[in-house]
Length: 254
Ligand code: 13P
Image (cartoon, rainbow, N blue to C red; front, side):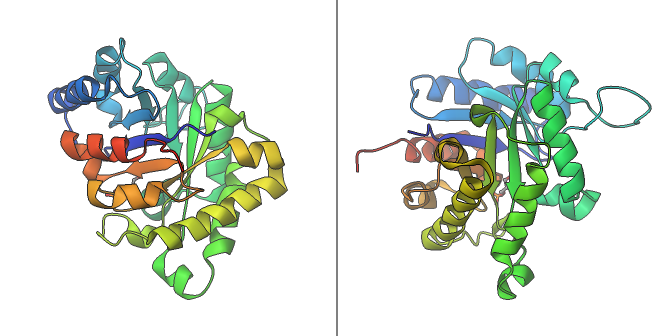
């Protein structure tokens, strides 16, 4: 059984006071839920104060990105060891916004994944095609290339490696993938994991869906057999909406 994992990617939102208020609300409302793993990914500037609020909580703290070196002349970068130092246990890597706007490539994603795992962090590796790539029937090829990039450093620890399938055309657009569209790609990713890492790894690694997930569409998405949680952007900025998504991800008897 894979424990569903729901993470709120706050992107470029929330100052320290706002972040503390939101995470306190989440902690209060999600305290009793133990059958879904829940995380938040605030901006770097809010990681330390949010970590303090989460000290007595089972919610986990994730960064939105990390660098691949531990120290040196790399102005503006943040090392995975530094993220662990302030209380992060996870980091996103390879989000499509990093790929589109900041030159992230499969090669840099591979280096970041390896460095983050080495620092003891869990990694949420993001994969997903653009609309033009989907229209050109390249979805599986693109997702395979992203996945191969993330796995370039070798076989990851299964409990600390998560894939987030985020079709770029569904991010921030209100155009969620249909449950069938998402399931098709998730099943493909699991097949690819089986080829690359074997049956046990494919059965254990969680694959989140991301892209316009809201309370209203979460339940049908989460019911798909290969969808193991969600990476939530906009809807994670609102406590009630995010809590409802977490509840929709709870495992239910078939
Ligand atoms: P939205 O939920 O706002 O579409 O963003 C998804 C995402 O990019 C999460 O990482």
